[in-house]
Length: 441
Image (cartoon, rainbow, N blue to C red):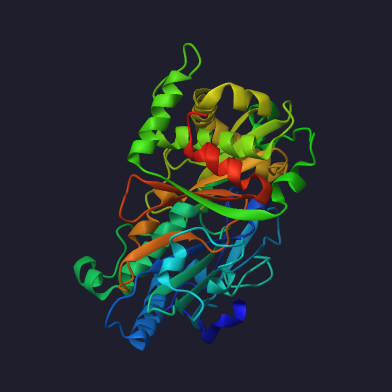
């Protein structure tokens, strides 16, 4: 399959104007061990009649060079800090990578359903960075022209430099520069200037906070009663299930009906959908009744820390929320019980909680253990569906590779709807899809 995607050209794109030569320290949250990977987005655009492919490629390359002026750390290189813990970015306009390719094996209809395998779309971002600390560019963009004239834009961004919100802000700025019509309306500058200020999310020097590890279950290990990692990672098959407004409201109604006595019955779409996915996944795979399970998800702290972070802060500004229960309770007590666990996990995240996480990851190198864990990432709220680079209508937003980490994805035409994509062990796929579609079971 990979041989059917032909790379035409790979080039290094440097900022179009002079940028500061400096070394910028990354924050305690940026430097976490579990963030040392690349966020990989795949955006697929419908065929656009009359589009000049050569001119479009040149336009995107020029836009990337201009976007790197304000976001110049994306043209640098990430390395361990030589004089202490954490990471830093060496900024010397080393450049990002831009790849142009063509594919005779895909057309736009192939992206309306889940990929056939976990790595089926891997070649649509052919530069895969396994170790972000070995001098690789923190940003890679691949434009692939598909068989029917559609286009796929694969983007890889070093997670140490930014979180999902920050990456989406960068990509929307890049898109505005690439889209000539929007550029005339909006001008050359992003709506909000990007802000570095990574020191704002570091623990205070010389002052250690006494942290109760029990209040941070995201970092605590649970007993492995079933060879968990093998059970959830073997023979994975990608799945995709869409929830529209009607189905989300149905989940909310069901959650209210099955909530615990005295429990708040006002749940968000995220809380009920996360609980439903968690419960469906656990029931389909079949864990021992007393196996502890965790649902781990990111909580944006931009407005939860005091003082709040400035607008335009594009670094990692999230901590992990963690809901925890046994497989037996998750199944038997219903979606209202799970929704309550998710809600309370979100509510625990305040200023003091975030400061404790900084201390744990900076001084103790705390890192989540994967046993018992399902990770949910909410890409549906990042603004990725707004990325308009002037190549036609955006059809699909998702990951380059579909893994066991669950993603909530946006749908362009139905802003309330959410597509849930996750890879599930093949033997569990049928039951998982049954439980996901029949929420009353």
